[in-house]
Image (cartoon, rainbow, N blue to C red; front, side, top):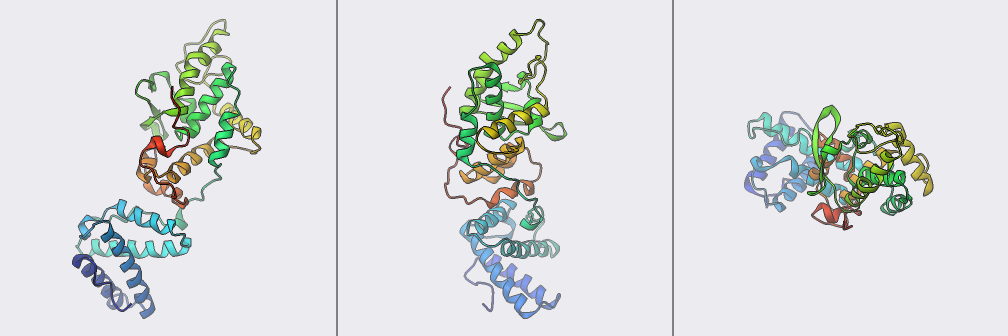
Length: 313
Protein backbone atom coordinates (compact mmCIF):
# COMPACT_ATOMS: atom_id res chain seq x y z
CA UNK A 1 0.00 0.00 0.00
CA UNK A 2 1.72 3.18 -1.21
CA UNK A 3 -0.89 5.57 0.07
CA UNK A 4 -3.85 5.88 2.37
CA UNK A 5 -6.98 4.47 0.72
CA UNK A 6 -8.23 7.23 -1.58
CA UNK A 7 -11.71 5.70 -1.74
CA UNK A 8 -12.33 7.04 1.75
CA UNK A 9 -14.08 10.29 2.58
CA UNK A 10 -12.05 13.21 1.25
CA UNK A 11 -11.61 14.87 4.63
CA UNK A 12 -10.64 11.66 6.42
CA UNK A 13 -8.20 10.69 3.68
CA UNK A 14 -6.66 14.16 3.62
CA UNK A 15 -6.18 14.16 7.39
CA UNK A 16 -4.48 10.76 7.22
CA UNK A 17 -2.23 11.93 4.39
CA UNK A 18 -1.12 14.90 6.47
CA UNK A 19 -0.35 12.66 9.44
CA UNK A 20 1.70 10.24 7.34
CA UNK A 21 3.60 13.19 5.87
CA UNK A 22 4.24 14.46 9.39
CA UNK A 23 5.69 11.08 10.37
CA UNK A 24 7.91 10.93 7.32
CA UNK A 25 9.17 14.50 7.21
CA UNK A 26 9.13 15.84 10.75
CA UNK A 27 9.72 12.63 12.68
CA UNK A 28 11.85 10.83 10.12
CA UNK A 29 10.00 7.53 10.44
CA UNK A 30 11.41 4.58 8.50
CA UNK A 31 9.79 3.43 5.27
CA UNK A 32 8.46 0.20 6.82
CA UNK A 33 6.99 2.19 9.72
CA UNK A 34 5.24 4.52 7.28
CA UNK A 35 3.90 1.52 5.38
CA UNK A 36 2.48 -0.01 8.55
CA UNK A 37 0.92 3.29 9.67
CA UNK A 38 -0.75 3.75 6.28
CA UNK A 39 -2.25 0.26 6.44
CA UNK A 40 -3.53 0.69 9.99
CA UNK A 41 -4.94 4.15 9.30
CA UNK A 42 -6.74 2.94 6.20
CA UNK A 43 -8.40 0.17 8.19
CA UNK A 44 -9.41 2.58 10.97
CA UNK A 45 -10.82 5.20 8.62
CA UNK A 46 -12.68 2.57 6.59
CA UNK A 47 -14.28 1.39 9.83
CA UNK A 48 -15.33 4.97 10.59
CA UNK A 49 -16.79 5.36 7.12
CA UNK A 50 -18.86 2.20 7.68
CA UNK A 51 -20.26 3.98 10.73
CA UNK A 52 -21.13 6.92 8.44
CA UNK A 53 -18.47 9.18 9.95
CA UNK A 54 -17.28 11.56 7.24
CA UNK A 55 -15.49 14.29 9.21
CA UNK A 56 -12.69 14.25 11.77
CA UNK A 57 -14.91 16.53 13.87
CA UNK A 58 -17.54 13.79 14.13
CA UNK A 59 -15.22 11.13 15.55
CA UNK A 60 -16.09 10.35 19.18
CA UNK A 61 -14.61 8.21 21.92
CA UNK A 62 -17.46 5.76 21.36
CA UNK A 63 -16.38 5.25 17.73
CA UNK A 64 -12.84 4.42 18.87
CA UNK A 65 -14.11 2.02 21.52
CA UNK A 66 -16.24 0.29 18.89
CA UNK A 67 -13.15 -0.01 16.69
CA UNK A 68 -11.26 -1.61 19.56
CA UNK A 69 -14.16 -4.00 20.21
CA UNK A 70 -14.15 -4.96 16.53
CA UNK A 71 -10.43 -5.82 16.71
CA UNK A 72 -11.03 -7.91 19.82
CA UNK A 73 -13.97 -9.69 18.17
CA UNK A 74 -11.70 -10.64 15.27
CA UNK A 75 -9.37 -12.35 17.77
CA UNK A 76 -6.31 -10.28 16.93
CA UNK A 77 -3.38 -10.68 19.31
CA UNK A 78 -3.29 -8.17 22.14
CA UNK A 79 -0.02 -6.73 20.78
CA UNK A 80 -1.63 -6.22 17.36
CA UNK A 81 -4.65 -4.49 18.88
CA UNK A 82 -2.42 -2.22 20.96
CA UNK A 83 -0.29 -1.34 17.92
CA UNK A 84 -3.34 -0.34 15.91
CA UNK A 85 -4.80 1.62 18.82
CA UNK A 86 -1.43 3.37 19.25
CA UNK A 87 -1.65 4.48 15.61
CA UNK A 88 -5.17 5.80 16.23
CA UNK A 89 -4.10 7.64 19.38
CA UNK A 90 -1.11 9.18 17.59
CA UNK A 91 -3.33 10.25 14.70
CA UNK A 92 -5.76 12.05 17.01
CA UNK A 93 -2.95 13.71 18.98
CA UNK A 94 -1.68 15.06 15.67
CA UNK A 95 -5.10 16.37 14.65
CA UNK A 96 -5.40 18.20 17.96
CA UNK A 97 -1.88 19.68 17.93
CA UNK A 98 -2.24 20.72 14.29
CA UNK A 99 -5.50 22.54 15.01
CA UNK A 100 -7.64 20.28 12.84
CA UNK A 101 -9.76 19.29 15.87
CA UNK A 102 -10.66 20.95 19.15
CA UNK A 103 -10.48 17.78 21.23
CA UNK A 104 -8.85 14.36 21.26
CA UNK A 105 -11.50 11.59 21.40
CA UNK A 106 -8.80 8.94 21.89
CA UNK A 107 -7.23 10.54 24.95
CA UNK A 108 -8.97 8.31 27.50
CA UNK A 109 -8.98 5.08 25.49
CA UNK A 110 -6.62 2.66 27.24
CA UNK A 111 -4.41 0.12 25.53
CA UNK A 112 -5.07 -3.47 26.53
CA UNK A 113 -1.53 -3.97 27.86
CA UNK A 114 -2.11 -1.16 30.37
CA UNK A 115 -5.33 -2.63 31.71
CA UNK A 116 -5.42 -4.65 34.88
CA UNK A 117 -5.79 -8.37 34.42
CA UNK A 118 -9.38 -9.49 34.67
CA UNK A 119 -9.89 -11.74 37.72
CA UNK A 120 -11.44 -15.14 37.26
CA UNK A 121 -15.11 -15.22 36.36
CA UNK A 122 -17.59 -18.04 36.66
CA UNK A 123 -19.59 -19.28 33.71
CA UNK A 124 -23.28 -18.58 33.20
CA UNK A 125 -24.08 -22.20 34.08
CA UNK A 126 -22.00 -21.98 37.26
CA UNK A 127 -23.78 -18.77 38.25
CA UNK A 128 -27.16 -20.41 37.71
CA UNK A 129 -26.19 -23.46 39.79
CA UNK A 130 -24.64 -21.27 42.48
CA UNK A 131 -27.81 -19.30 43.03
CA UNK A 132 -30.17 -22.22 42.64
CA UNK A 133 -28.16 -24.21 45.19
CA UNK A 134 -29.04 -21.88 48.07
CA UNK A 135 -31.79 -23.22 50.35
CA UNK A 136 -34.47 -20.53 50.55
CA UNK A 137 -36.70 -22.39 53.01
CA UNK A 138 -35.20 -20.38 55.91
CA UNK A 139 -35.02 -16.61 56.56
CA UNK A 140 -31.20 -16.67 56.38
CA UNK A 141 -31.34 -18.66 53.17
CA UNK A 142 -33.65 -16.04 51.65
CA UNK A 143 -31.21 -13.36 52.76
CA UNK A 144 -28.22 -15.12 51.25
CA UNK A 145 -29.99 -15.86 47.97
CA UNK A 146 -31.27 -12.30 47.64
CA UNK A 147 -27.85 -10.77 48.37
CA UNK A 148 -26.08 -13.02 45.87
CA UNK A 149 -28.72 -12.26 43.25
CA UNK A 150 -27.82 -8.55 43.59
CA UNK A 151 -24.07 -9.17 43.56
CA UNK A 152 -24.35 -11.14 40.33
CA UNK A 153 -27.59 -9.79 38.86
CA UNK A 154 -26.76 -6.10 39.37
CA UNK A 155 -22.96 -6.11 39.62
CA UNK A 156 -22.84 -4.58 43.09
CA UNK A 157 -19.66 -4.27 45.11
CA UNK A 158 -19.82 -6.15 48.40
CA UNK A 159 -19.73 -2.83 50.30
CA UNK A 160 -22.63 -1.50 48.24
CA UNK A 161 -24.66 -4.61 48.98
CA UNK A 162 -24.17 -4.65 52.75
CA UNK A 163 -24.76 -0.88 53.02
CA UNK A 164 -27.96 -0.93 50.95
CA UNK A 165 -30.80 0.88 52.74
CA UNK A 166 -34.54 0.22 52.61
CA UNK A 167 -35.10 3.84 51.62
CA UNK A 168 -32.93 3.28 48.54
CA UNK A 169 -35.27 0.65 47.09
CA UNK A 170 -37.99 1.39 44.58
CA UNK A 171 -39.64 -1.98 44.18
CA UNK A 172 -42.55 -0.69 42.10
CA UNK A 173 -40.31 0.75 39.39
CA UNK A 174 -37.55 -1.84 39.72
CA UNK A 175 -34.50 0.18 40.66
CA UNK A 176 -32.35 1.10 43.66
CA UNK A 177 -30.01 3.90 44.67
CA UNK A 178 -26.55 2.52 45.32
CA UNK A 179 -23.82 4.39 47.19
CA UNK A 180 -20.49 3.54 45.57
CA UNK A 181 -16.90 4.66 45.93
CA UNK A 182 -16.45 8.21 47.15
CA UNK A 183 -20.09 8.25 48.29
CA UNK A 184 -21.11 8.61 44.66
CA UNK A 185 -24.70 7.52 44.12
CA UNK A 186 -26.00 5.80 41.02
CA UNK A 187 -29.28 4.26 39.94
CA UNK A 188 -29.16 0.52 39.28
CA UNK A 189 -32.04 -1.44 37.73
CA UNK A 190 -33.15 -4.60 39.50
CA UNK A 191 -35.47 -7.02 37.73
CA UNK A 192 -36.11 -10.67 37.06
CA UNK A 193 -34.72 -13.04 39.67
CA UNK A 194 -32.96 -10.21 41.49
CA UNK A 195 -36.24 -8.39 42.10
CA UNK A 196 -38.17 -11.58 42.78
CA UNK A 197 -35.79 -12.72 45.53
CA UNK A 198 -35.48 -9.22 46.98
CA UNK A 199 -39.26 -9.06 47.38
CA UNK A 200 -39.33 -12.56 48.91
CA UNK A 201 -36.62 -11.59 51.40
CA UNK A 202 -38.29 -8.31 52.35
CA UNK A 203 -41.67 -9.99 52.82
CA UNK A 204 -40.63 -13.25 54.49
CA UNK A 205 -36.94 -13.28 55.36
CA UNK A 206 -36.14 -9.93 56.96
CA UNK A 207 -39.27 -9.76 59.16
CA UNK A 208 -38.60 -13.33 60.37
CA UNK A 209 -35.03 -12.43 61.36
CA UNK A 210 -36.29 -9.46 63.36
CA UNK A 211 -39.15 -11.46 64.90
CA UNK A 212 -36.67 -13.77 66.62
CA UNK A 213 -35.17 -10.90 68.59
CA UNK A 214 -36.43 -9.73 71.98
CA UNK A 215 -35.73 -6.11 71.07
CA UNK A 216 -35.23 -5.48 67.37
CA UNK A 217 -32.80 -2.67 66.46
CA UNK A 218 -34.03 0.20 64.33
CA UNK A 219 -31.55 -0.32 61.49
CA UNK A 220 -32.78 0.43 57.97
CA UNK A 221 -30.10 -1.72 56.36
CA UNK A 222 -31.60 -4.23 53.93
CA UNK A 223 -29.45 -7.26 54.77
CA UNK A 224 -29.35 -8.21 58.46
CA UNK A 225 -27.28 -10.53 60.59
CA UNK A 226 -28.83 -12.82 63.20
CA UNK A 227 -28.66 -10.03 65.80
CA UNK A 228 -30.64 -7.67 63.62
CA UNK A 229 -27.68 -5.48 62.72
CA UNK A 230 -26.19 -4.79 59.31
CA UNK A 231 -24.53 -7.75 57.63
CA UNK A 232 -20.74 -7.21 57.60
CA UNK A 233 -18.45 -7.40 54.58
CA UNK A 234 -16.63 -10.32 56.20
CA UNK A 235 -19.86 -12.25 56.65
CA UNK A 236 -20.84 -11.59 53.03
CA UNK A 237 -17.46 -12.95 51.95
CA UNK A 238 -18.13 -16.12 53.95
CA UNK A 239 -21.61 -16.50 52.48
CA UNK A 240 -20.25 -16.24 48.93
CA UNK A 241 -17.34 -18.60 49.65
CA UNK A 242 -19.69 -21.17 51.19
CA UNK A 243 -22.03 -20.99 48.21
CA UNK A 244 -19.04 -21.45 45.89
CA UNK A 245 -17.97 -24.61 47.67
CA UNK A 246 -21.46 -26.04 47.15
CA UNK A 247 -20.82 -26.08 43.39
CA UNK A 248 -17.13 -27.01 43.62
CA UNK A 249 -15.63 -23.52 43.28
CA UNK A 250 -13.02 -22.80 45.94
CA UNK A 251 -12.37 -19.33 47.37
CA UNK A 252 -15.19 -17.68 45.45
CA UNK A 253 -15.03 -13.92 46.04
CA UNK A 254 -17.94 -11.44 45.88
CA UNK A 255 -16.01 -9.37 43.34
CA UNK A 256 -15.89 -12.43 41.08
CA UNK A 257 -19.68 -12.22 40.87
CA UNK A 258 -19.42 -8.53 39.92
CA UNK A 259 -16.89 -9.35 37.19
CA UNK A 260 -19.08 -12.22 36.01
CA UNK A 261 -22.04 -9.84 35.78
CA UNK A 262 -20.10 -7.47 33.51
CA UNK A 263 -18.60 -10.26 31.43
CA UNK A 264 -21.96 -11.95 30.85
CA UNK A 265 -23.64 -8.62 30.09
CA UNK A 266 -21.05 -7.82 27.41
CA UNK A 267 -21.33 -11.32 25.96
CA UNK A 268 -25.10 -10.80 25.84
CA UNK A 269 -24.72 -7.67 23.72
CA UNK A 270 -24.87 -4.86 26.29
CA UNK A 271 -23.11 -1.63 25.32
CA UNK A 272 -19.85 -0.88 27.13
CA UNK A 273 -21.16 2.53 28.20
CA UNK A 274 -24.20 0.92 29.81
CA UNK A 275 -21.99 -1.51 31.71
CA UNK A 276 -19.81 1.40 32.83
CA UNK A 277 -22.83 3.17 34.28
CA UNK A 278 -24.20 0.05 35.95
CA UNK A 279 -20.85 -0.71 37.59
CA UNK A 280 -20.28 2.89 38.64
CA UNK A 281 -16.92 3.23 36.88
CA UNK A 282 -15.85 6.86 36.56
CA UNK A 283 -13.52 6.06 33.65
CA UNK A 284 -14.46 3.99 30.60
CA UNK A 285 -10.91 2.63 30.56
CA UNK A 286 -11.71 0.63 33.69
CA UNK A 287 -14.69 -0.98 31.98
CA UNK A 288 -12.66 -1.82 28.87
CA UNK A 289 -11.13 -4.83 30.61
CA UNK A 290 -14.28 -6.71 29.61
CA UNK A 291 -13.82 -6.27 25.86
CA UNK A 292 -11.92 -9.57 25.71
CA UNK A 293 -15.27 -11.32 25.61
CA UNK A 294 -16.44 -12.69 22.26
CA UNK A 295 -19.69 -10.83 21.60
CA UNK A 296 -21.39 -13.64 19.76
CA UNK A 297 -24.99 -13.14 20.90
CA UNK A 298 -26.18 -9.62 20.23
CA UNK A 299 -29.13 -8.22 22.19
CA UNK A 300 -30.00 -4.62 22.86
CA UNK A 301 -31.65 -4.35 26.23
CA UNK A 302 -30.68 -5.23 29.76
CA UNK A 303 -33.65 -7.55 30.18
CA UNK A 304 -32.35 -9.77 27.39
CA UNK A 305 -28.63 -9.30 28.04
CA UNK A 306 -28.49 -10.76 31.54
CA UNK A 307 -29.24 -14.46 32.09
CA UNK A 308 -31.20 -13.92 35.32
CA UNK A 309 -33.41 -11.09 34.13
CA UNK A 310 -36.25 -13.28 32.91
CA UNK A 311 -38.34 -14.16 35.97
CA UNK A 312 -41.75 -12.72 36.81
CA UNK A 313 -42.76 -11.56 40.26
